[in-house]
Image (cartoon, rainbow, N blue to C red; front, side, top):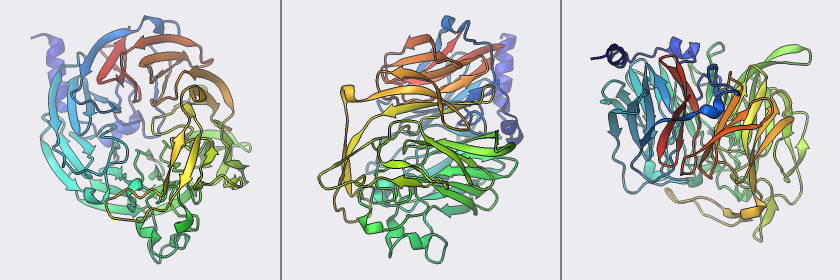
Amino acid sequence: MKAGSLLFIAAVLQAQVPFERIVKADPKEWLTYSGNYQGHRFSQLKQITRENVAGLRPIWMYQIKEPDHFEASPVVADGVMYITEPPNAVAALDAHTGRPLWRYERTLPADLRLCCGRVNRGVAILDGTIFISTLDSHVIALDAVSGAIRWDIAAADYKTGHSMTAAPLAIDGKIIIGVAGGEYGIRGFVDAYDAKTGKRLWRFWTIPGPGEAGNESWPGDTWKTGGAPPWMTGSYDPESKLLFWGTGNPGPDWNGDVRAGDNLYSCSLLALDADTGKLRWHFQFNPHDDHDWDATELPVQFEGRIGGKTRKLVAMANRNGFYYVLDRLTGEFLSGAAYVKQTWAKGLDERGRPMRLANSSPTAEGTKVYPNLYGGTNWFSPSYNPLNQLFYVAVREVGSKYFKSDTPYSAGAPFLGGGELADTGDLTSGAIRALDSLTGKMKWEFPLKSPPWSGVMATAGGVVFGGSTEGNVYALDAESGRPLWQFQTGGEVFSNPVSYELDGKQYIAMAAGHAIFVFGL
């Protein structure tokens, strides 16, 4: 047996990724959903550069079995790549070759209540365990070496519309996950579980109940079916021990008549104490949202000078079409600007609250508004480059007619209150935009033929990677947006890129069509 094979086997058998290792964010690995806790999706590797990226070629690919959208973001540790396959499978692959090491597949009930497809976006790793959330609202721990189940916890009842699609976030001894199901009138929550036992340590309800601050923003019992699902992965600040998690739309989606008020904490960014789950602060992007503009986009942390002093910041390119910068310790609004076409607000006031235009709400006849319900961007990841302080985001330029109707609540049934008719064809477009991270001002743009459904990753080599609905994985110059390389995968790209190093060589990995593609020089 070759020495390299023996080293690989030793690494697999070890399979230990402690919290401190994730905090360090070794660039040779990709140990958490966004590459680091701060949500940067930035690789410090620089072997692949703007000068040589044109030489990238496919090294290996791994084909999945199911036809559903492949939205997984891989985790890579000690020479092993861990991915989720739709609808709810986990595979451990040799990161050198793509050879399967083990595979776990969950049997799902036939009567799932799902809004938006049979998808899963990735795993978390902590110590010697892999964690996954499931479409029937379970959180499961698997042995990282064998794939054997260590524990399996039911977080909620899928029959009432609860589901889970996000990659969990593993922090110090805890697994953090939010629930989906806003289109079914659930009451959203963020949970923390003991990583070793699966015991639930705390739950934060994203809609306050009676006697809690914010409950007055829901008339009567509407808080019980108000939605606000935190259905994507958030970010974490190990220094302040704050979790940053975005929440989704209030219910019903498009008819706000039955829920007068701001509807806290829907369409908000929450700062939660990681030890207790208590709310430190919140910022609501869309008070009384009636366009289904979930604020579940990735909260990205960085530091920058504002008003003559260095501030600890958190930023979000929001689905509603505005880019926001907040103080991450207090939630204070610092700056904001539209980064796509939007026709529903005059702008943001000094507190960051939108100044809504008249006649922008859905009507029975339909009201034309930009952006459409899928927003200026969506769940796919942006990237922050600490070397040039640019924020890269895949944007969607699409308008829509929004309609309002009456939808009575029934447990386990869609609770929508209307619908929308989006623009198609030549009326739509997409782009990758580089924004000044402090102001949201656009620095450059790379046009895309169609609105994208995939995220971006910047690298220290001066390259930004992304994917298109036409099936291209591509590389752009991080300073100018100039196209440098592309590869046609033969399938639409609904995922986020990652990078890792093995045996001294840098690789780029991205799901496209129904396969994981790994590229190298």
